[in-house]
Image (cartoon, rainbow, N blue to C red; front, side, top):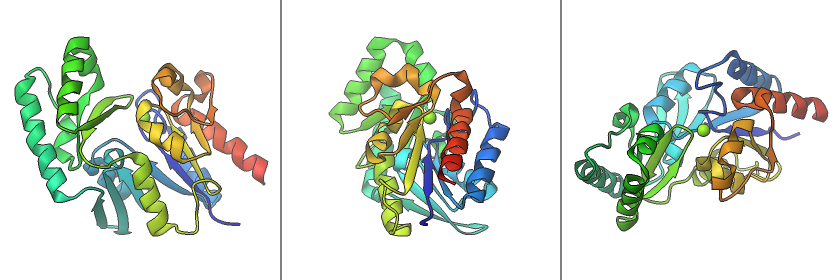
Length: 248
Ligand SMILES: [Mg+2]
């Protein structure tokens, strides 16, 4: 039997109430026992990716909402592959400076210093600025060809053809060419920025905390878990336990 791959969002999907939980380590152990690869696909910064790859038993991780693919070649040797060219990276830097000078109340997230292909603003800060500012910012993005999306924690913005799904497709083609998204992969997510993944992976699962965003999604997961006991990492763990017990 071919090896399976589990792709998963991180915040709100592999965490519990915003924190790392023993459930995450149980998920990692279960997937290891089942010889299944875990690939985290997160909107967090590239530098977070270095941390996660260094300290968890993972080989590949996708960060910045699909802007960067990181691969562990050796314990202290991590390869960075940006999904956009340098010109696009420079343009984003230029427009980000313009954004913060035009909207002085906007502060980039603390982890934006470690970002290369996107930037982030705390979702709570955006919500507090009111709908008019939100609309003005979205118009600013539109005029300059900047894309954006909301995760459960951030408003992320970027330039170029970046998506969690495009980076996942790149990873599958480059490193797992005998695996296809239909038969060999599963995806777990919890927010609107996982929408491209719900479209790309026919076998997708939304943890129960996704329900509050369900009307904001362009594409919905095949399965939406229900109940507090299935929120975040608990939902992933419960689903995987059932999935593997049914298969064996
Ligand atoms: Mg999330």
